[in-house]
Length: 62
Image (cartoon, rainbow, N blue to C red; front, side):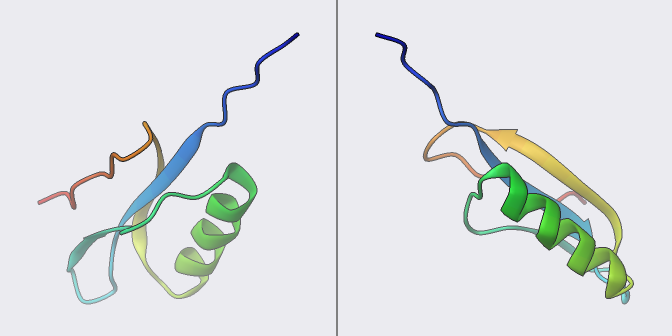
């Protein structure tokens, strides 16, 4: 029997007006990629996908 471990992904970004943000939930990889594209099309900068452990979320960069 093979066990598959699901990876969790969160995002960090900077809004167009310079506010640093981090996602409040974790996503699967396809959803994180979609959200990244959406943030970038909304003129957010420094958008990064971060691998997180279950129950862990990134802090907004300063």
